[in-house]
Length: 593
Image (cartoon, rainbow, N blue to C red; front, side, top):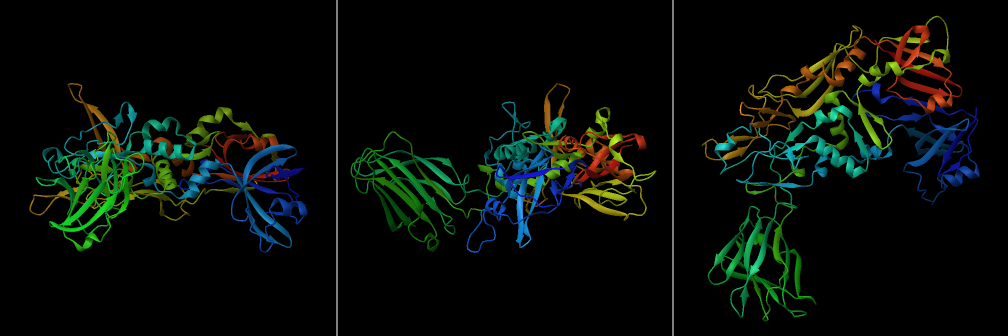
């Protein structure tokens, strides 16, 4: 048998030992893990060619770019290319260079898993949050969107619109699409997409974002003909800053929250070019002058400043900013504005923009994808353009496409080489759980494995969302409560939640869209979707290990979603793993009932 390994498009020198490959099926692995196939350690001999290809990795004083990163590789057997792989240099010794290969998962998806980014980074937007805000059904112009979907927020918000409105909710499919777009890959959810589109994460906090929560006002007019004080039209608001009007000085900006480090961003267009001190910002505290900031015009009449307020405002209780245009200058026709912002702003208030990303749960992207898979019993497999998510139903439905391995079996006796009655790391009762909610009934469910030799129970899955159904209300996400005197709406920590959009129609045909937790209880889900077939597979597992003569063509064309048939056992089997070395492959197979 001839083996070839290529690095950077050039064949390496291989040693005498045959390479051992581990082909692994994600479809039958731990539902909580997304894994790739891999090789055993490959020791490359210390030839001049290998030293050059690996960029002199153990030469003192030389930092090889291949020492701490993955690099591209290709593996051939008997002239047939089996796969493209990612290779890594593990170590060097006098015996050679130890490398290992991984394959079977999209390169971009591997990057996604390794980045450890939070989902908070993939919903960079904000929604108006004020008395004009209206409910929606999760669609904007016919497209999925984050928005305001009815749910019980803990108080009657409809009767208290002067004080509060519900928080937005984030659509899980829209979030997944934003993640996929960022990494330039396709996530194919198949028929399950229609169900994921109904999932939402109601936002329970009010964390501010300096990108959206800042003061902004357009500078729109002048007064006196000699010293021209400007007028302001507020565009965006933030707690701690407002606009005030004075008869003497026109409009002024007041900063009454002086404990924060505020920064300025000012753009004023004038009709004066290359003139010193065209714009003056005068700072006062309780009518007492503090300091001025002079801004000169550039050669197109632009006066710009971006930076800190030029003194320590924490020493004052109230700051007033007056802006005037000097030297006979007039405002230009291009928009002028002032922005004041701070990274220290902690919370967003009603009548401001509500930032989406900063209020999402701090969950890694890969964990979020796993959570969606847990809810439906889905597993990730490589596709041509990215990754597909399918259930074990696919294997069962593909029995009519089964590949006949009967003549490839290398018999070792009358029975399989090895037979076992356990599969995976399971107990007799395997729980799917949410975070406990003391105000609601348990939403946990479990799968059964009929084997009394296993531990009695274990937690297989625990989602970081608090179970719904507070006080029996499946539409409750109670993040609001009244203050003790019943006059102020306060924020309550009710735990992160996940809900499902339910649309109904009244007798008049009017649509009613609300968030509901009922269908997300695990005791309902373990008997539905892909979890149902997964339960059937693991209930009474029958696993064999046997040796087969699999050709390079067989290995190249492995499809884990298609079962194999073995006449000797008169049964169909799903592939769990294949350990291939030379002409022989040891295969671990799960019998399909």
